[in-house]
Structures are given as C-alpha cells and as structure tokens.
Length: 292
Image (cartoon, rainbow, N blue to C red; front, side, top):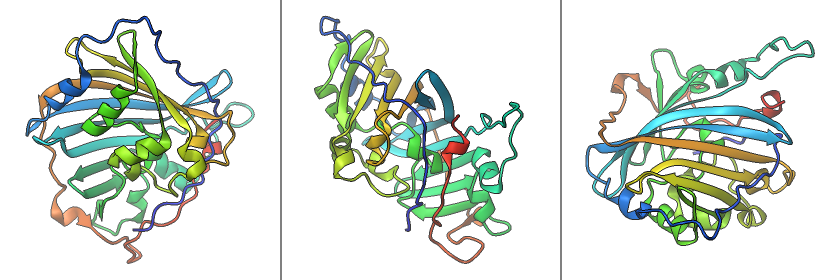
C-alpha cells in the first residue's frame, strides 16, 4: 500500500513536559499490571483526545479524536475511532472565516476508522470523496489504525503492554502517577501502533534520537486516567524547526466496560477507489492553513 505523503507544517514551540520531582511518592498500583488485568475478551476502554500545536504563547487545537478499544485475552482485538482536523481557526485579516477548499472541507468532516485484527476500514473525511457510489468504507490491510488524523495523534498507546512496560521502566514517580521520556527510535522498536501511525515517510536516524516527553496520571487502581505527551516536530521531520512542537492529551474512561466492535456491512465496503485504484493516493495537507 502506498503511504499517504503529507506535507504538514505545524507552527509550534518545543515545550517539553518536565519529569515529576524525584521525591514524589510512587503511584499506589503498577499500571502495567492494572492494564494487563483488563485484557478480557469483550471488555475494553474508551478514550478522547486532542492535539495542540504550540507557537510561543499561542496554542491551537488542530485535531480531536475519540474512540474505543476492545480487548481479547491477549490485548487489543479491535478499535473504533472518530476524528477530524479543526480548521475553524482559519481566518482572513478581518477575522472572518476564510473560504475552505475541497480538501480542507473533507478534512474537517468527521473520519471514522474501524480496525479489527490487521484490517482497517476507513470512512468519512477525505475517504468519502474517493469512494465509488454506493460504498462508504474503504478496506485496507495494515492501514492507519486511527485514520488520517493519527499522524498527529497520541504516539503512546497504553493498551500495548510492551509499550507501557517500557515507559514505566524508565519513568520517575510524579504527582498522581509517572513521567518520563522515550526516544522515537526506542518507541518504534516496541510499538506496532506507533509504527503504523505514519502516513508518510518513517522518521530517519536523526529523528529517531529525538525524545518524546510524557506524563501519566493513574487512578486508585493504577489504570491510566490522563496521558499528556509533548514532542518537538523534529521527532517526525528532522528538517523541521526545533522550536516547533506538538502536545497530545488523552483521557481514558470506562475501563472494563463491555465493548463489541463489528465490521461495517459488507455491501458498503470496497477495496478500490472510484478511479479503480486500490492504493491510497499521495496528498499534501498544508497545516499552515490550519495553524495561526
């Protein structure tokens, strides 16, 4: 599958989250143990998140997502996500909304993504304009688990036991939980979710050395309640300015709730776009039109 080539240029500042004070008390429960106990078939957890671009004192929310993970006895069995870019910040000199072009209109339309095993179904958003008449879902193997918006979504997937274990191993106790850093290279090694979130080129060797800072708040049982990650844009593009950054906040709720994620009706699914192609086309998304 041809990856989407994005030209997203965020204007944001590299404000990294500091690890918690060394004297802070450790969390009452181990989050690795707490999360793995949740791996029960038919159970799951809900999440909501927002991605913020930062430039000096200016902050702009550019992406919102929400969704659900469904577990098996071994980990994540399926997921369902809704997300979209927030281009309402667009404005002309007199602060009136600027006219959106066709691509931008598609990007602010909610995008739905369902992943079951290694298969991903994509609908809404940009995909709506590409699908043939009568079809509402595009099916692709090993597609972007959280859709197009995942490129700036949460890089740390705490439902991956190996990822969470790696994070906690190198963390410090912080108020309400833990805090730490992990390099892009180390995260790529341990996290299939992170590797699958890249819709363009994978990070090069220079970007692999860049650190992602994170802070995790857990509940009384040790389960993740809030996760905030911050990283300079050089983590994704080595040529980006070191003064540009992204911050992603994820809130978790409903651990242990009953979840059943099903594939879309087969008659609404296609593996080809309306032009007969089955490869995701190259795309340039000017986020400079989003971030001001």
